[in-house]
Image (cartoon, rainbow, N blue to C red):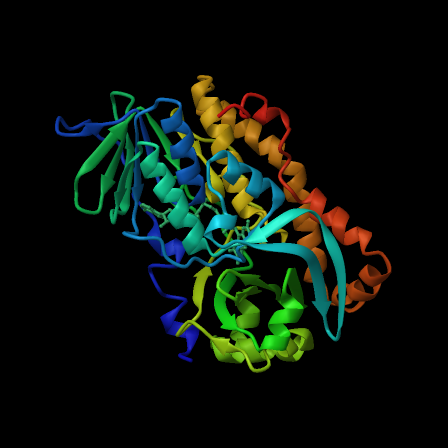
Length: 408
Ligand SMILES: Cc1cc2nc3c(=O)[nH]c(=O)nc-3n(C[C@H](O)[C@H](O)[C@H](O)COP(=O)(O)OP(=O)(O)OC[C@H]3O[C@@H](n4cnc5c(N)ncnc54)[C@H](O)[C@@H]3O)c2cc1C
């Protein structure tokens, strides 16, 4: 496999920090196409908001830079809350191949502990999920423009928002939903990521005995500087998704194959899973600078921030997709109820704060060498702790911010 140093860490298509977009103030040009709502980004949050708005009779234009859905760095775990929201959107994940996940297993050093999940869960590749979501948006009447990257977003003197695309054309609307995921708009950038997290995803075809042991389980593996997860997805393959702080990756010479080997030395459970496995991508997909723990404090009038643009929860919780769907639903409800965007954003922040604090606290524990040594012993004795943690790090579906969100 190729070294990661130059091929991945500087890949502009996957590195959020290199995708910043200029925000300026300008006057509205006569040729602009004016829509009621503009949605920037057609991933989970953007599509979910677009579908709900269109079904509520709003004219919506969604701009997505990719011409077709592609693999994204993601563990591809769908929590019970995510499954409920997807069902409300009309996405039947089982019919597109999602596989059930019933257990969580935690492995560190030479030990592993297992507990049943306290909610139904599944896994599905992001490519399949994003394909279904964008198809549903189109079927709901959303004007989807793919293959265009938003370069600039300006609040015009007439109170409209104006997005300038990479081909120089503009789109304007009084309301914008910002759903560009890990990619920031300049002037709307999220906090720095001091630990400089790097994440990788790779698909493997496991040896038959290992695939059988992994069936129905999501396995979380701990190693110095990060953690990784492996779980089955559709098509009889497994997704290995891992995060590591940049300073630990440096110890592997910034090379994927060295890092993969090191993870297996530090966590023999992973070595066992990958024995005889066939990698299915020519190189892993990678992303850098993930601002874990971020919750957007405020926004401007008419600009609702959703998904990773609203909050970035540590990945081990497997709750980012659920938060993306939840924040989209809440933002649509707020917009339909004429709640100003700054008020919505502040309420969302307080609703997500407790869950985020607990997830950050647990993530600190996972990165602690003493905890890594004792956790599997402790959890084998009290597997209930894993169930409770899994439950508490879910998004609070019934908090005050969603009081008017259930109908959308
Ligand atoms: C290592 C890792 C593992 C994870 N594992 C899980 C998991 O197992 N389960 C889970 O629930 N969550 C997981 N997450 C979190 C989850 O992937 C995200 O929270 C979720 O994808 C956020 O959805 P979104 O819609 O905000 O962003 P995305 O789904 O990333 O969508 C953003 C979209 O915007 C588009 N875009 C970006 N910039 C522009 C632009 N300038 N113009 C036009 N379009 C643009 C992109 O192409 C993309 O389609 C994980 C995250 C990481 C980093």
